Structure formats: C-alpha cells, structure tokens
View (tube, rainbow, N blue to C red):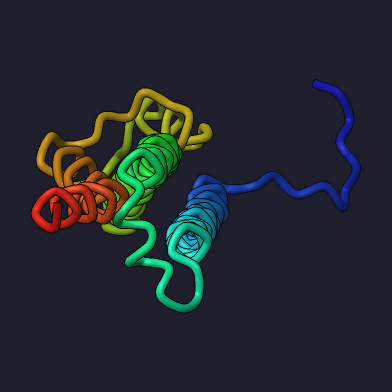
Length: 168
C-alpha cells in the first residue's frame, strides 16, 4: 500500500451520500431553471407572434379575412409548440430521474443512519449522473408529465384553430 500523506483523509460513505444528495438537489433546481426558461420563451414567442400576425389596431379583423395567413400562423405556432414540448419533456423526464435517485439515496442514507447494511452496488449506481441514467420513472409520473406538458404547449394553437374555424 503506498504511503499516504498524513493530511489526506478518506471520505466516508456518509459524507459521500450527503455530498451526492446536495448535488442531486442542486441538479433538480437547475432543471427547474431550464424548464422555466423554455416555458417563458414559449410564452414570449406565442404572444409575440400573435402581435406580429394581428398587428396593433384592427389587425385581427384584417387577419381573419386572410385564411392562408391564419393557418400558416397557427401551423407555425403548433410546430414550435411540438418542438418546445419535446425539449421540455426531455428535461422534465431527466429531472424526474434525478428526483427518483435522490429519493432512493435518501432511503439508503436513512437505512445507514439506523444501523442497517446497504449493498454497495445499490449505493454505487445512485452516485452516477442520474439524469442520463436508466433509472425508471413510474408510469403515472411519466404520463402526467406528458399530458401536462402537451397541454401547455399544444392547447393554445389548437384552441385558436378551433376558435378561427367557428368564426369562419
């Protein structure tokens, strides 16, 4: 065994778990920040495009007389919504993996704190980068994310298309 400097200190399993939990909580917060940037960007583009297509004064009445322009605008916003929904969903699913890993790591930390043994393989897998891992996400959480994110991005252009179809 090579000589270690006297000042070198080995990290304990408890310290490793605490450091990793802090890192996972920081990652969850960073995913939230990314998601809100994507969502606020969508809102700016959505309402900005409405202003661009409708204009300032009386533009909406003029716009309604140009069906090709209306359908082009709605298709553009719909395609943008699909692209951003896919981005948002990708980040949200990664965030859910980090949350699942943090919860499992907390359970292992509790087990260690109460004197139970924890298999090193369980702990080792949770110390890896969780967002890019194969950590399973429960079907209800995954489905809820898909439905809510889909509704957020796709409802406005679909509602606008239905409203336009009714007005025509």
